[in-house]
Structures are given as structure tokens and as C-alpha cells.
Image 1 (spheres, rainbow, N blue to C red):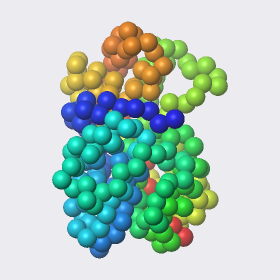
Image 2: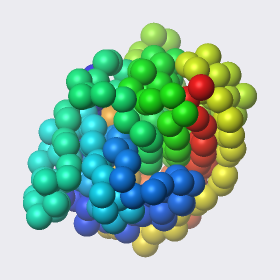
Image 3: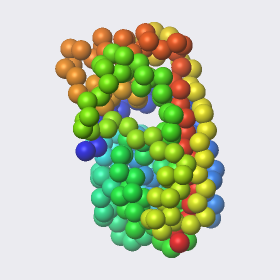
Image 4: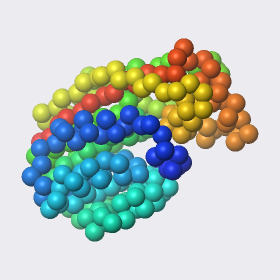
Length: 250
């Protein structure tokens, strides 16, 4: 089930996602007239950049958070004539007019645990030969934060639904090929983000990283939990490891 986000707080933070977005979109080869699907578009950060790359094209944004999409419509109100916005689960069939020319995604897929269904669904939405570029948290991502969460909450009981899924290179390559992608390139890149200790770190953890954990706790426990996790980190750093994907539909 897609989770909701505090979209305004999300946009107010110093997000490394902007850098990740630029790097991901730079791997697309576009003429400017294509239709591109932004899978997990959030508040529209990368959709704005895509529109600049597509003066004669369109962008379709898909996200599971109604709050994020509401913020997107506000931010891009003057550009909605070339946008389609869809609230949907990326592992389920998307209601599109036809296959798109390319798909991009930034910082989304680690929130989805069923990558086999995810890639198969995206492949079905992409035209033959269409480009697919993405990045997300990969194997080893936020390992220190995970360890801190376990110190605070204890190890997750067996059978509890996963909050994140940080896939590795080999399994991702295999799943992409099984879904019908070719020219597959997958890599892992450590990319730690340093924040200010104290309020900024806690706000970042609560809004960007620990939201799914907070969903499982009483609201009265949220602040104490976030501060307890932050206190266990050796420095105010989010130890990101990014999984980068480039492929084409065969």
C-alpha cells in the first residue's frame, strides 16, 4: 500500500534527490517530442526538469501519495497543459492512452518490495525500444540508520512487512531481463548526505527516511523515536548507497 507523505516538509528540506534526478535524466537520449513517464514523481521536482527537456512532448507523473500529487499540481500549475498526473500503485496496470517512449524514476523503487511485478508492469507501459532510467536505494543503503532503528525498536519480528527493499546489482539485472529489458546496466554508488546535527537531521529523518516506521508508532512516540535514532548515529550523515539502472525494452 503506497504511503502518504508530508509533501510541504519534504520540499523544504535540503534533498540530495535533486542531484540524483539530474544524473538520472542525463542518461536519457531525447529529441524533445517524446512522452515520458515519471514513476514515483512525488512533488514534481523531476517533472519540471523533464518538461524543459521536452518542449514538444508530454510528461506523465505517477505516484501513490495524494499529498505529493496535490503539491505537484500547485508547483506546476502553469504547466499542467503538458502534464498528466495519475495516483496509482506502480506494481499494478497503469491506465495510459498507449505505451510511453521512456520511463524515469528517482528515489522510489526502494519503497516497493515486489521488484519483479514493478519491472514487469513498467515494461508493459513502455514501447519496444523505449528507454528506462532509474535510481533508488540499493544494497547497503542507510545501513547505519537501519542498525540504529533496531537498537531502538529491536529486530523486526519474522513475518512483519518490510519497510524498504534495497536490491543488489545481480538480482536487479536478472529481474530486468526477466521483465523483457535489454542493454541492461546496473551499478551501486555510495553517496552519503551530510546534514546539520539536531533539528535539521531529525526533520530529515522523520520526513524522508523513517516515515514508514513512524506510521507503525503512536503519534505521541514519534519525536522520541526519531531523536533516539539520530542519537545513535556516529555523525549527522545519511549513509546512502544508490542503485543506478539504465535499460531498454526489448
